[in-house]
Image (cartoon, rainbow, N blue to C red; front, side, top):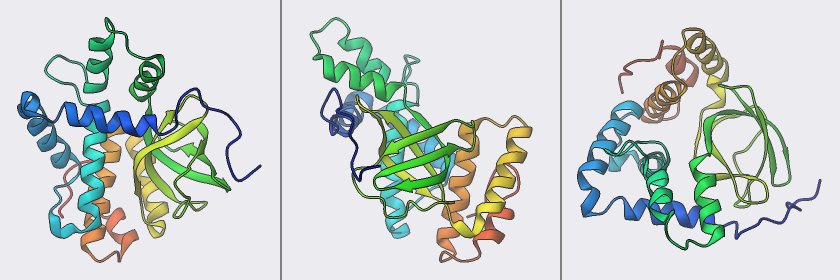
Length: 230
């Protein structure tokens, strides 16, 4: 396979990220202050509260929060911001490429993935929580995408092929067995997939605060989905 994707998208590949930023900015303004404040409290309670001295984790989690808020978290209307944006645009002359890209974001797929193969900028993933397989193009670079790594990410159709949204959470390779054991147990107990990822995010934060050491012990000690001491 060539180093770059050969499928021509129906719209500018950067439109996905542009729209994420636009919708996030629109629904983070004064008119939605109560909504985003409640959403932020919910997200960081479920994924682990971060602070500025958490360094790179603070920035990454803030971006992840905005992505989750825009695509998944219902507003008071019952619709997340991305669906609310589509509904409001239904009666307007929204350009076809923007409407399709918004719909793609609304139907995107966030999960925990096992990296099965890397070929140039094409990454083969197995959905650990659902079993599906994806071939995803990553134009920004594939540093960190190694076979056997477990990563929380969001896959979205860009008009030509599956690509990643903006954020990733790479779990430590030394805790791979412990993570997969936890996932098996959680799925057997019918734990909601979102809560599985939030629990693992809390363990990742705990590992980060322990200086990126003792990954296997920390993830094994996380137990079943529930509070994680940080």
